[in-house]
Image (cartoon, rainbow, N blue to C red; front, side, top):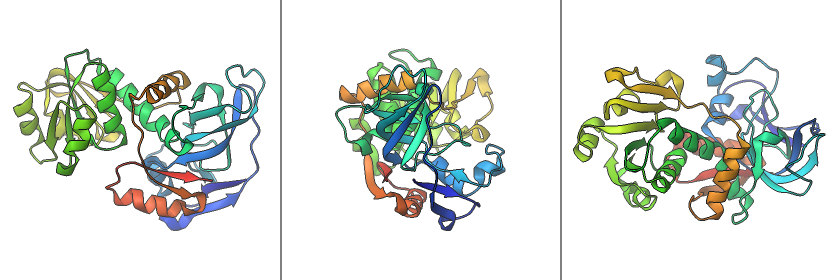
Amino acid sequence: MKAVAVRRFGGTEVLEIVDAAVPEAGPGQVRIRVAAAAVNRIDLSTRNGALSEAGLLAPAPVVWLGWDVAGRVDQIGAGVSRFAVGDQVIGLRDVLSAGGTQAEYVVLDEGAVAPAPSGVPAAWAATLPLIGLTADRSLTLTGLRAGQTLLVTGAAGGVGAMLLELAAARGVRTVAVAGEDDEPLVRGLGATWFVPRTSRLAEAVRREVPGGVDAVVDAAVVGVAAHEALRPEGTFVALVAPFAPPPLRATRVVVQEVFADGARLTRLAALVDAGRLNLRVADTLPLDQVGVAHDRLAAGGLRGRLVLVP
């Protein structure tokens, strides 16, 4: 099969489309014939060596890329009970040493897989696992109840936009921080207040929510500037551990670590089918255009995901 790999770290020139053996599903696993695989910033961090430098990626002669997948179950291993050959599924690869989803086939544990939303094409479905699981678990970690307030940085991005919709569904009021041109978008996703990106973020947020918000999910990795908008004893959810601020003013700071959760992903897919979660695709590209996808993602400004189609 064809698969995206890197043998050394660097720019997009190190990306390779290699011939690899088709993997076999082991006990408790399913093999998926990949229809679409999203490109994420963690793919860029894998390729350029940032994950290796941070000690998050074990040395290996070949590293495979791709986390999100949508496709069809092609083979099942012993003991698999939830899926059958031919099922349309989505899933998440969360072990960096395992085979990646940017390939023609990928093997995942049964517990990492969910039925695909039936109302959207595979390219759209492939954008759900990583950002959906990240957003949903981040909101859960805040512990917020209906009527409380949440600050979302990077509100027009993949995780941020999904947070706005999930929060609105739970009755949580949100302050959305994004670029000035993104106000119609984030308000359409359920934001209660809109604050344009500014160097005086806490001041701007506190004008809207006196005393500070009950919780923050820092999808844009703003750090302490976003923390200053938090009330005493509030909760700050960081998505990148090295940029988590200290728990000043008796706040609680937690780091959201995403993991493959098929049960949670099944619930999110149902929300997509119910029209309560929107998926966005900026463009689809063939697998051999992975370098173009990396360059476009690194340049920023996308409103939607880039998806590779084998």
